[in-house]
Image (cartoon, rainbow, N blue to C red; front, side, top):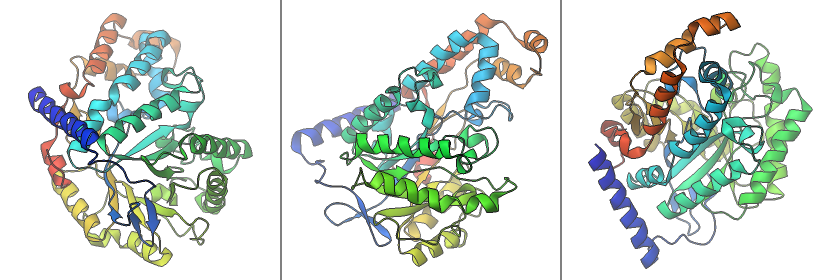
Amino acid sequence: MMKRITGILCAAAAAVSLFSCTGAKEEPAGFVRTDGTIFVNPDGSEFRIKGTNLGNWLNPEGYMFRFPGHVNSQHFINEALCQLVGPGYVENFWKQFVEKYVTESDIRFIAATGATTVRLPFHYRIFSGDGYLGMRDPEDGFRIIDNLVSWCRGAGLKIILDMHCCPGGQTGDNIDDSYGYPWLFTEASHQDEFVAIWEKIAARYADEPVILGYDFMNEPISSRIKDKDMLNTRLQPLMIRVAQAVRKIDPNHIFFIGGAQWNGNFKVFDNYTFDSNMAFTCHTYQCRPEVKSLLRFTSVRDESGIPMYMGETGENTDEWVRGMRMALDSVNIGWTFWPYKKLGSSSSFVKIGTPEGWDTVCAFLAADRSSYARISEARPDQAECRRILSSYLDSLALEKCETNDGYIKALGLEL
């Protein structure tokens, strides 16, 4: 497997070098934009979004590590690991995790399959300098994105920036690393911070055509929130506010607007014209992989007269992925399947190998840790657990991962 991945990477690197020398991959001046219900390149040809999500990288989720269900968001994971091996080790663990999880080799590999786009889910705290994922400098988040932009420019990929975790929480569930309620919609200070971060992002990347656009907030307002109907009325006004603020800085990029309840409810919108270069973004997972399952999204697209993009779908068998991809293609909805890389799973571009002893770490996380005494009782040998976690970090390198050939082929991409 290592030999085959190395061969793919060498071919991708050679292609990038050739394009750089001949100018054959030179990007036309200007930006991808919306035109009616499609996306178009600067030369007027249609741009098709097809690719993957760089999930788990800048917003770790417990299931991507095969951790117990209640250890499902970054602050729960971080607390449990600190109890296991100490905060000093854990801070360094996260620094290496960020450095190794996605590298230029990964981006070249994605591009070599024929993908056009990567979606980057990120936590707003990558810009805070508060120690999130070991980041102590507010510029750390921008340095990561700067690197990704450089890699994607060389590989010929576009990037969609997705704020997966907003100040205060926009979902009220594990995916936004919140405290169980979308306080973004009830607290003015959170909304001010949300807008201010997007203004900083826009100021940094307004003139960068590698970035396709901004996905302002992921999956707002969980269906499990009791007063979701009241909160739903606050989504459109906040989207209009952030769009207007960002557009004063950035005249170039597409704005992606997600529906309420897992990016599925677009009835909360009645204004389709608050920006002239915007698209809707939907998500769906548990459904039949057929056009009939997409009609609720195509109807919104046709009524609004703006594009619809499937920001997330997948997490299923190769057969299901093939069916969903073909259905999306047939109704001209672009897609980024979830996710690119995952531990011990074939429902992704590549599979991370499970380190020896990983069950020891998982068992501690699953144990009763409701008191200091019980934490102490449950904790296994710290040196051994540090070895296991270090082994996990070593396994993140692309050349040590296994390509999921059937999954990539199901997406209509190449190996």
